[in-house]
Length: 519
Image (cartoon, rainbow, N blue to C red):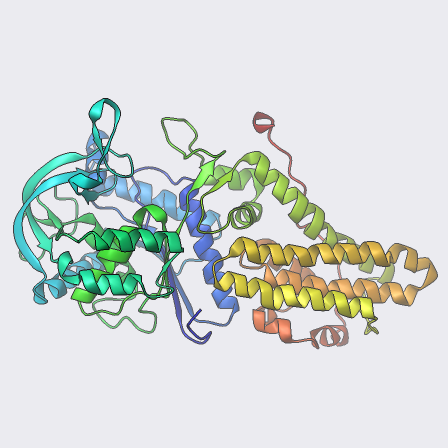
């Protein structure tokens, strides 16, 4: 990354639209952002992490009307489910923002007034196609044909012809600046999303309708009675609200990373930068549009009856096992697939059999054969080679991959180190050394002890609870668990000198069984 590791780091998810309960896609993005936030904290950076719910718009107003309740009442209930999801999945946000909060109204109106002061807003009449489900306007040329000749958005959602008085934003004014931004290396990733957005802007930008008069569930447009802001104007502003805009936003703006789904890249890399340019505010440094998570290869939908509650998965398989699977299984940025069988297979083969069993065997043998007491020991070539392999994976390969958001690549490097440890156990056979060379047995077990500490520190962003359990069992203090500690090779001798004793270990990752309905 271009930034040095001393700069503050601000990461955001897209805020979730709470017209339904959370699904696995919401969990996937929240977990990925949490892995990024935890990783950057362990790298020693000051981190701000924000998520939340996007509560305004016609879709929420209609859903509330269907249920005979107010939009705010619906938002209060549904937003609560998203907060519970984040808390259950151990998502370490600094603020869970709601767009119905008073400070957000203030920030959105301040941004509007800044765009108005720049001469970029004008009143006119909107006639065109609008998708309530996407909360997005579409040009006739973008529409696709559905069943019976119905017009659909590019996302396949229904559109309706809308005519109303509207405030417009001079999006066309920023076309050249947006093209320059989109062509800036590193601003929008992956490259496939960047190419799509460049092609979209090159076709020519039209001014954007940014207010509605047909409903009132939204942020009122200042000085224009009857108008509420287009939901995306106020939704995007949440990234500023959470830092205190329009007052001093402190050290975290511009955002280091907006993490979003690939279906809302246009809003974040064309509309949002244009609003910020108009308001004379710094632009975010990086936007990453991740792929979709598919259920056995199919997109989840209520009509197919395959919508998955992520909290049910977490309860069945464990939070850390679910987090690990989602970051390990899918090349981040691409679409990926999951199933209960795939979660069980991955968790058992890698977490239970490889890593968990390594920790359990090592610590149990130290307790049984050394009474849990650690000693200084002399390393042989095989010991040095193993620790070099583990050190390279944990201190170099995994961090380098995680900086690039290549989580599966980083975890793959970590797993190679775990497998190297298991191969070392088989080759050194400490159970045999117990009879033939007890001192060598101690050296082997303690080499593995040192390796476990490095492995546990490195994987903390992905499996924070289980990694902390193991680091507790290894006697590693809480203030020595950042990535900088991986360079400290004298920690083991200090631990020996302290008189630390290894206690009988608690298994980290018990093997999972596939529920009968999925077997």
